[in-house]
Every structure is written in structure tokens, then in C-alpha cells.
Image (cartoon, rainbow over all chains, first blue to last red; front, top):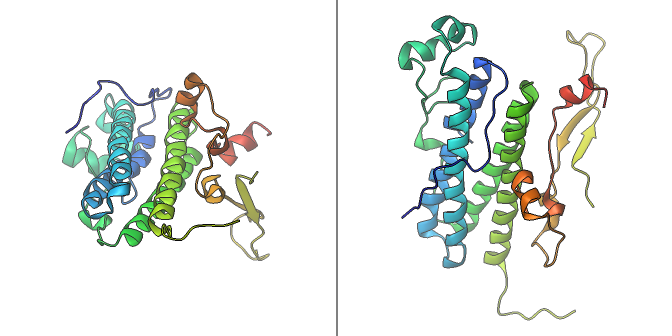
Length: 189
Length: 74
């Protein structure tokens, strides 16, 4: 069960009318290494992972939904008042034809989200290594979006999200350390 | 302390069509070096932590676009 707080994890402010940025940001919405993929991956893997790290997957998977909501807010703000003409200029004409100004789970190239983006191998080490890789890929995606964007307010929120990817990667790495730990052996120094 | 960025110098040809990028950089954030987080690391104040995205100072690694930096002459 979840408890919902009707606020964003970090404020989202957009200072320029630039629907083109929405096109890039959608990569983190419905892309392979996006927040939706992350949330669904972790919340699904947690059923078949050792007890010690279930809570970690629950916590991080939940936070990914908070990030998804931030990305959605950014995309919405950037496109809500865009005219068909502006959508076209931003390269979102194909999106507009199918969805008007609605959000949709697709990547920056317009490919709809698919469950093949995520894996649940049932092997704890394999799954956690995938999760670490996913966090690093999402971190890199945020860097490339920041490089493409000159909206300083938006970049501030994106920097926050990138920092969270670093922390998540750190915690998944620690989870691996817990699971591979030789607990019977005493360490002597 | 680790450095948050590394660089290398890729080969470029005098016949390359675009202006060569002589130095390539990539991020190496602190989580790559920390291992299992040791106890009692320095912390941000709660207010600072909410802005930074982490409570832990050694794990804070803000990213700025190199193109933005170049424009501001940093």
C-alpha cells in the first residue's frame, strides 16, 4: 500500500517556453532507462530478492514514481499551451496527431514504452547489477538532457534528479555487498 | 577524494568533417569509489540536503553542462 503526498519531491520550475525540451525529457518518462522503467523494474524484482534488500527495492521503486511525477510536470508545463504550430516546430507533430497535448509513455523518438526494457532474472546478483546499470544510464541521460537545455530553472531540477541516481546506485552497490558478504567468516585485521 | 570527471584525448584526423573535440570527458561520480558507506560521514543540514538531493556531503556531485560552462567562461 502507498500513502500519497500531494506535492512534488523537488520543485519544478520552467523558465522558458520551449516544447523542444519536452521532446527530450520524454526519454526519462517512457524511455528504456526512464523513471517508469525504473519504478516497475524494482517494484517487480523485490518479490524474488533476499529479504535483506526487499525494503531497499521498495523504497527506491517508490521514489522513482516521485521522479516520474516530476518529469511529467516538466513535460506538461512545456507543452500545455503549445499550439499545433509550436508542436510541429518542436518536432512533436507526430505526437500531436496521435495524442494532442497529452502525455504518453514513449521515448524521445516516439517509440511506446515496452516491458522488454526491464528484466527480472530471479538471480539476486544479476538483478542488482541490472539495477546499478539502470541508475548509471539514467544519470548519463540526465547529463545529456542538461547539455541540450539552456533553461537554468529546469536544469536545477534535473541536477537534483541526477544526484538521486547517484545515491540509488550507491545503495544498490551496498546491497550487492550485503548479499555477497561471507557472514560466517570472521574478519581479522 | 575522487575527482568527479575524467578525460581522454581521442584520435582525430586532419580530414574530419566537423571541428574535432580534442578532449572527451566523462563523469565518475563518488558512488564509484565509496564502497560500503562508512559510518559518521559529514552531513548537510536538513535544509541543504533537500536542495542537494543527498544528506551526505561526500556523495554530492552536481553536474553542469560543459557548454554552459564554456559560455560563462568557467
